Image 1: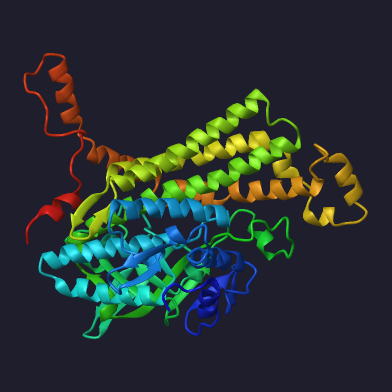
Image 2: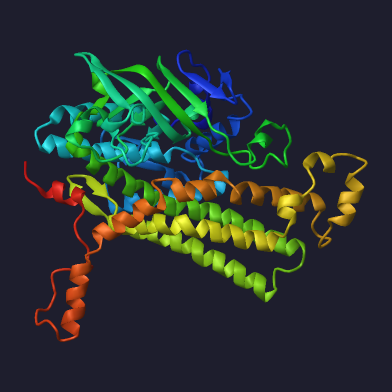
Length: 501
């Protein structure tokens, strides 16, 4: 079943018996037909269809040495810097197809993270994790499984460690020969109701007192004891409408609170158990992978916003005005900055072990720092170009009212080449893409808050080395510095990968 079609994916998730999924307080049995979740399912579907479409299959497919077959890239283990760059390019391309988050990236980054972490642990003598994980990876690739990644705990009081508080972190509550039992919750989990399996990881570095919280595993979403509460989003009531204008885009994303109520995980699906020393390494690897990817998806969504803004400017005849041209140019500059740092993080990748390629952590964190800022600037500029109608346009139902339509067409007409309906469609598209969780809120808090990246940047950048360079050039120091091109320190992940077992 390698390289499933979108329809095959949808058919696979239609019927579930054990998991409880709630939307607006009511349980949902078929997520593929529920109006609140269907747009999210269609976004997932696009990742499968892309592997069969001529304009994207060269990016959406990759060769797997684990099963000796071509697989969907969302289940692929990166084997070169070029693979990592293809990831960023695929995410930008898919954004053009969906106008939304496609929700498989966290699970994909989790796969690659656990491949490296379990391999590093195997080199230290703990081989069971790696062997289990490779078998699981083969299963995922052969069946083209839709994965969600679950890292973020609810955290409770941020100044307290996991063992110092109750119910703030997912926890191992019992270990048996057959497996483990876990309880807790994971928050803001992207695409969770549309996934087939969920990969769970620790959310932070742990101490020996926190070892029960240092756990990584994968489990089918349709498992006894799992409950999903789908969260609200901006303008989400429109998903419940049956229109074709106000409901745009037809594809979108969702997040949810995932509750694990005494859930059993078979031991063959456990990839880290009370290995608190490795939890920080896991988080470091995952966060860099995920921050790198934002350079692709956010630049792709920005392309949609730029295109919509340009079209709206043309509809009212101002596309050649110098101030509009300047705003569009600024939007392009911001977009390509996000994209280029994601590509740089890929092509300047680090080989951690045999067939283990990790992104450049400095560039990955710079990518995400830019993403915390630039989408808001791009949205502000697009709002400026589109005008107040972006937030005040009549509804689709007003336009379809035979009594009101003539007035709307009379008073909202711009250049005669463009029907008023075209203008309303483009306004709604711009509103739904730019003023969204995917482009704004996720850009700030996805893959860690802005401060998380700044902490990493300060940890990697070697201020003492930079000072020595300055002291040498000021003739205050005699020693030349030739051992580094960049004044960077090694990350903890790089250090541990170089240690011999």
